[in-house]
Image (cartoon, rainbow, N blue to C red; front, top):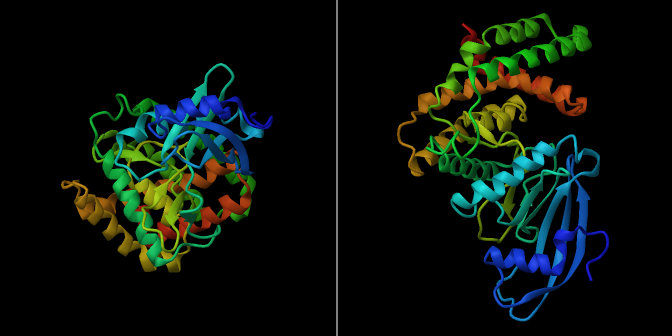
Length: 354
């Protein structure tokens, strides 16, 4: 009997069908399901399920991760769930293995806006690099950036982009998004008062004024890929000590077609203070480029990567404003604002505004 707190998708018969369809279970069947652990994230609910089988179950997973909406955000953030289910069920199967957790089942119900994902449980073999907000070690950063480059390379200028994989934003879409941003920014600036310097206000106004020209990089539809959209280092699972395995990326509710350096800029310029960023930025950009080449991306120069990275860092000054607009706490957006502004200054990104 399935415990009453579990949704219907975890009924033994349904799990058996899902695992058989995914090729993870042959002759046996799920006999019992129990909750091993559960927790809320900011926008979702994570349940670790233990499984017991009847019959032959060699190689079948002994546990699964069930991801469902957070009760407080099930309706308001439903599109993120829709997006993530699409990623795991449509895109992930077409990618090289062992870049993301394996998905055994996923569904989004358009009628009531509920969704679920049944994912590979990597709890025993993998871990987050550090406790937020501590940055990862040098070795951890190298492993994370290598995996990110391989993940980007899998969809780099892929012919399905904008066709069966994701959608292109039109120039009109970009203009509308910037108009929305400008409204948020005006309220943000009014709120901060003298805590937002005149120099930074000028930078924001120049970015808004130059946004159409800056957006031409995206609208070229060249050297683009699937970007994660939230690629901080706490969205990567690293093998535990003594485990011979690869890094996995997770949380795909914000993926989309974009300039891939947006993920690098978000990871480093947005989240690392200058001393650490300056110590490892060049190393990691070199590593990223080398990994692209090893993955078959041969027409993207190291200079182009630098230009795109600076372009992405400049655009990321918009991120704290967007975060503020959806009520992300100041503990997050204020520190992000300070760090990304220091990166803009260090890298001379203002030059891109002409």
